[in-house]
Amino acid sequence: MKKLHFSILLVIIVMMSCSFPVNESGNDDIITVTDFRGKKIALGKQAENVVCLIESALTGLYMLNQNDVITGIPAAVYEDHLYTFYSQLDRRIKDRSLTAPGNWDFVSIEQVVGLNPDLVIIWASQTEAINSLEQFGIPVYAVMLNSFDDVYKEITDFGILMGCSERADSIIQLTKNNLASINQQSYKANAKSAYFMWSQGISETSGTNSTVNELLNTAGVKNACDLKAEHVTVNIEKIYDWNPDMIVMWYNERLDPEDVLNNPLLQGIEAVMNGNVYELPQAFSCDFWTLKMQYPVWLIYGWANSINGTPDVQNEMLNKMYLQLYGTTLN
Image 1 (cartoon, rainbow, N blue to C red):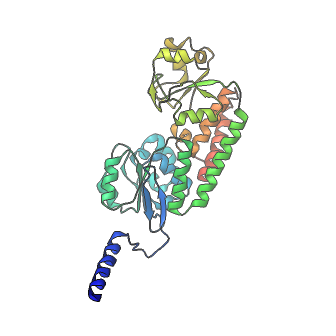
Image 2: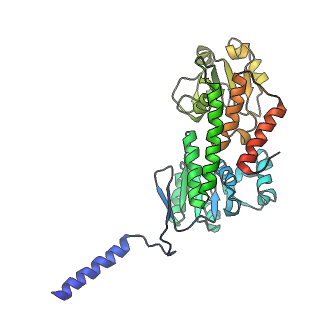
Image 3: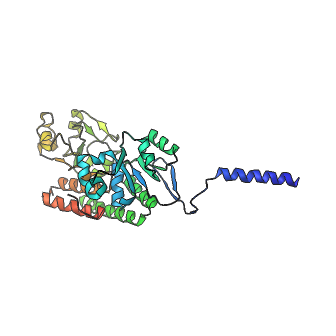
């Protein structure tokens, strides 16, 4: 009977050892965060070999001074409009020697695996690539950004995973303080309305359930689009119904504010009649899926309150933000 009891106990012990993960690093201080899928990511040590396939997330890693851990980047970084800036942040990018195994639309699993990363950062919507990477046992942090709070969470989690939480907390608080300062100055009972125009054309905008809506509200203006959709296509008649005081254009290589102002279909809209059509600068400086969201907020606040500022003043503000976030100014 004693032998039977011992055998049963031995079987239970073996089963238990197979049921729970063993930390082979010998480090009991497992680093864990929960990504935007709601999945827990657990690392036995701080991430030291990171493949980041999201440009907005990559810029956050440079803000966190994590240059040395980056071993793979999105292919888009080598495009001219982004290369200009990233080549100043990383010599390897300037030399085009840093591997670029994918983008939001394609990932070379073979290249990523060949880099032997201890963490891959990728969009949560790239489910096929995520499944393939996780089958190789590679930890994947999946991202989905719908608000400023999501941006703060992303940076906070990177700080935990890479052992730079103090820096993460510092630049998040700095950004929140800058946004609060603008918002406090911009509060008005009768706020101006703004129609946000994406680069696809005048009919493409964002509704109230969007980061665009948060961007406009923080700048003290009301989103003219009262639809809930994050991205929505509307007709010209709908824009006339809203009759916005301002039109704010996302950076557009094909259209300038003058093209909107001269569009014969838009001549009866308040914003066009009063010449209040504005275009945000190139996307790198105004990316509101990063902590740089403070710069477009500042610009929109200025436009709404006729505090346009000279190009020199705008460049001064931009360089101040770059210095705070990256530790350097960028040309």
